[in-house]
Length: 399
Image (cartoon, rainbow, N blue to C red):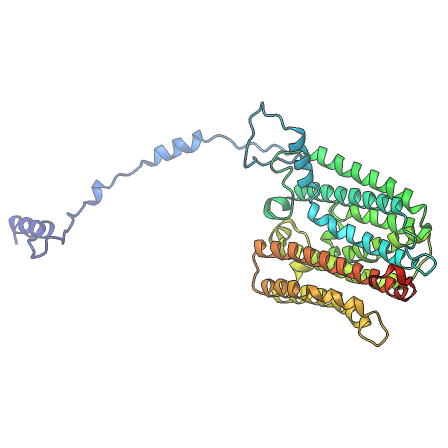
């Protein structure tokens, strides 16, 4: 085979043949010599031009950056007094204040019912003491919430838990140092007012107040905070249940204690623990990211749901079961009027696992506790006044 025949064969291979389909295309062959290459000398030249890497020590600091706010106000913008009040009102998270105020109401009313008698049908109620206790509790709870927001910001949990903080720092509404200062100031003023009220209740009130003050600060403060040691539910059970209820009762009675007040304080503590637990379920993603350990982060969703439901059912059982026997105060059963609200909460809770759904469940639980406590207070008042009805003069009764 001569060179001319070889050339014809190569041309027939490299040249596309006509086919019946216009979509079939073949590429011409490429010789190896046509592939671009880089001389080894060029690579060696580039390697010599590379800069040397120098290592410098980095000193760790406590500086934390503030993220950019979602809505940036112009520099010349000045907030009015009403706007500042709204900012701080959102910061103290007023919805949570009910958890602290309801025990004061139950303890004070229960103390007043023990002073109702035939000789004194109106009883004895110290309104000034009641107002001072309310002011102290509001300041302590507000300070706790502000300090909680500050330490959540330091840990970075506020970036993940969009429902769990007031966003005062993240939106650059308040400087972190100012928020901490205001929180500590609120705790200090609340502690002073609480000490003034405790003078009427005796040494036990001082002990309960001191424990509550320490729990309010260390609930979120430091890396080993109570809320990050799976103690949030337990702490809130005692603080928003027996401690505040018993303290308010002792201040009204001048230090005289009745063990039955502990029984009526337990449902309030169980409700507070349920609110805390569903709050932690809502924030579980951010807590895990920040290394915060709660019961919700340690257990599966099914067990967390079971704990929440058991806390609510136990709160009802403690009030209802003592009211069933013959001769007991059956008026306590009017708290069952809240069962429709409880049913709505339970049915919605078992069908959601999103932060938004759990956030809604938490606020509904606070509302349920409010209705439950108000009906409980009405039941206590009716129970105290019912024995006086036969002794009311007939001319005071309607014909």
